[in-house]
Image (cartoon, rainbow, N blue to C red; front, top):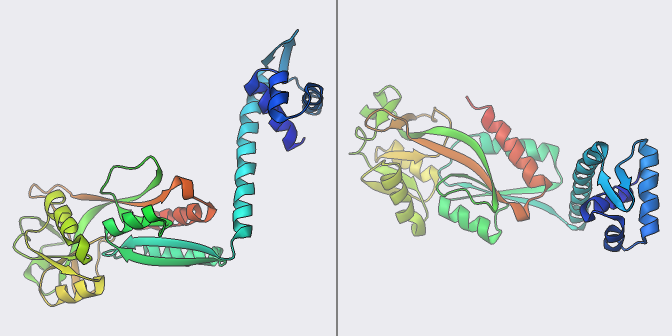
Length: 297
């Protein structure tokens, strides 16, 4: 059985006849008829029911049509990706993640991916949600690890990795750290909220925490997560962290923040990449990243 015969068969079904299919495939009607007859002879079952000039697809033909379409699509995808890989002098994967992200999921995913695909150069960079969004739009990033703040785009793959509580990190010596692991927004409203943000996104980040998550009334900004940790260790406030893990690195304590009524403030973490720029390696990395998040707990 030849792939060409599958393509001819699909063409006959979709053109509802041999004449139109032959024109579409740039061969003669007798040639395409011979190829279909040879295919039916090899399979040992009729794919078409012929009544004069009228043809209808048999049940076996309907099944073979669906499978042939899938196989042809897979072969074309494999062909395109093979050509792309072969034409690239260097295989690269650029991953953006949240500036305030704290956790091993991404690190472990990079380690596993690099072990399996050592030919790919993986680069990572931090940014705020807006920074990352713009990087994906411009093509600077192939894939993002970020939280969901916008409605999912139909042009992108939106892989949900985790629905997690909202956490903050505060100095272990702070009286609020002894609250049993859970505090409400009311209990910490008098303490400054430290946010990792670039200067041009400070207002956007503050609005998100204050107006959407309803966390914080006073805000301090840090250029990096390390700077934010030093500020929190010095008792200047608590860090609004992006993490699915329930514990922090000492001397900081991680607290789950809930609404005044005790209900959870849930955050959704996702991997995002554009469908029209996807490739095998992006999808493989996303799959590995999903497994890392599934193992948390």
